[in-house]
Length: 583
Image 1: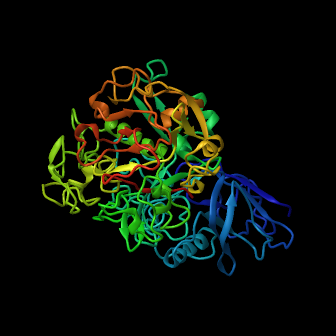
Image 2: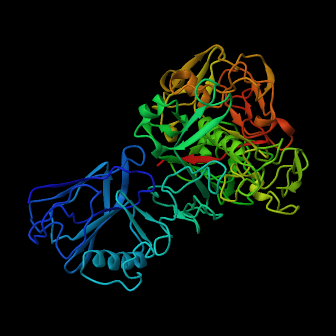
Image 3: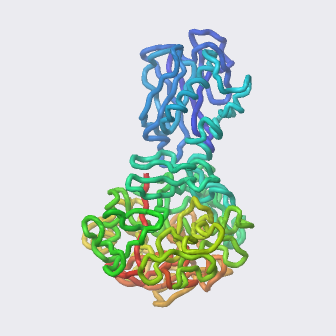
């Protein structure tokens, strides 16, 4: 028979690849050639006849980092029913083992279906092969039967598959619409469980996952963006965001003026996305967890200290790295790149929204996520929403927006996308310790894409350390003694300007800096679009960046806010962190 090769080209909304019979070969039951996913024909004839030496090869779409799935499942319709192979490692090319039976059709999924779904899939596949009639499809209408066949894709949208694939896999969504800014993880790692509604963009649980310590984390799919400079097809400071699947590769996107955000590079590889804590870290039985209504951890002994966690992490900013590891070795304090990516998504959502329908914090002048920042458990621009005190000063319990009083969906006003599925408290409550930028007192440095965030350590002597000469030489690239708005002026500035705020570069240091949310020289002065968020322009030795603002920072707090005047060994009651993780 020879090897049979199948290429499937379409990547958007591709959850399963269904290879079936083709009409360009006579219906000889001894051999049916499979070509591409563009010419389907069904009948009671094998697609491949059992042969112990032959195999099937399929070219799969790259859903991020060159990997389709680390635990995929392949289902076969055979004369005796449906058989399957599970826990298959599938890169962009996957070869099946030697055939053990005749195959009438087969489908590839990035993860195993539930037992109920497998039963329904079996009826579907056998019916398509002419071997059995299902009991849940309308006659001659498999579209109503919930599997939509469209040449190069199968869109699983309604029952019986909605629990696994209800929306675009690893799709950042459409700015201004339901579910924008979060998405479905293409390969759910060990220890994570999808929360109810995880695949429904209209659900509070969309893109939300629970880890084994009960932490809630949100999956943010990789995305491209174009920042308008007035000459690249977009007006100044207009942004356009596209899904990672929109381009064949980064080079093609760059040629169109789109950049893959810096947050989606880690360990020298492109990442499919990242997990970010939905809430600021709190002490959950010795583990730094993301728990709604948790009392946020701080880097000071007087307020929910890091040292109360397992292993007694140091009550200093560098202690956040050790504190994050109490959940697992793969976790780290979110990078400045991740925080800036969240700010960029909020900015894009604001520009695209025209009402509060899918953006609860939408407004004509204060069009950005709200936070606990007025030193009275409220937002300085929206006092209708009240946080619940954590018992220390005016710090709030994380995720408690609206639970202290007010009417309407106030929690959604505190998330990055104005929806309950979003990430909370990126504006105010507690400054968050970030990795990715530092200084030796003379120059400013940005972390290299080759660095794996989970491997960065908390000292100042080793090549893996986030601080110190040895770590800087190994992990960072210099931006120079000054860079654009970072002039070591020892002063506070404000984000936003009528001039271009971020670089539109698609590579190089300008792209790196834009990915860290560093404004251009003319990008400060303040504007409503950026909330006039604060930028504290300093260059201390062992600088440790902080993002978001705290409970008393007023209008200077916000999703863009960046504080550069504290260092590795600093400690403050208003400074904590949240964790991130890559696949």
